[in-house]
Length: 218
Figure 1 (cartoon, one colour):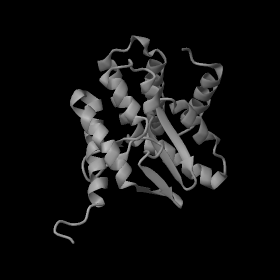
Figure 2 (cartoon, one colour; figure 1 turned 45 degrees about the vertical axis):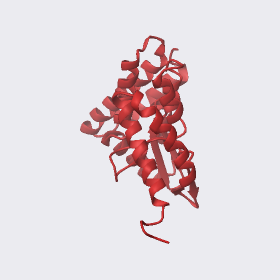
Figure 3 (cartoon, helix red, strand yellow; figure 1 turned 180 degrees about the horizontal axis):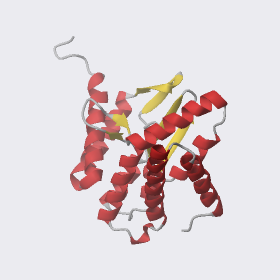
């Protein structure tokens, strides 16, 4: 799959904005773009990717989506947009980051995360990696216990918005159903996939435990 003319135009627009930034920031921005482009280019030619390479690619996407550079770039563009009313630069960055990383502006909040669906399309059906990305397409967590965060730009299927785009609540019953499925898959995973599955199991356990009455309660 080759890059389209539109994708090249987006790249040019993003690079132009980056190069207009102060020298140090421009250098970091160029590296960020190059890293995003590299991950997306590998996904576009996924036919030759082995399980280990796909795992490594997913790990790189996680590092980019939750790294300081992308967060700072998005924060800067959001601040500019609120002052100028011009959201095109943020939209251009979102298009440049896709499909591996999704950036979604939702009212007063901007959600970022890894697009598991893009990796599902690159995985071999019937493998543990394919099952992982199939599950993760419906939601997953990243991070250590007590510091879990949603790993995708969209809410998991066991969560829903509560009035504000920045607030959400979890359904313990749905969480319990997904917890059982993730627990069953976890022993078959390795590397970045296993780390994310462990975080997801832990996060779902927290959701389910929060709905249980305290020990000894009547």
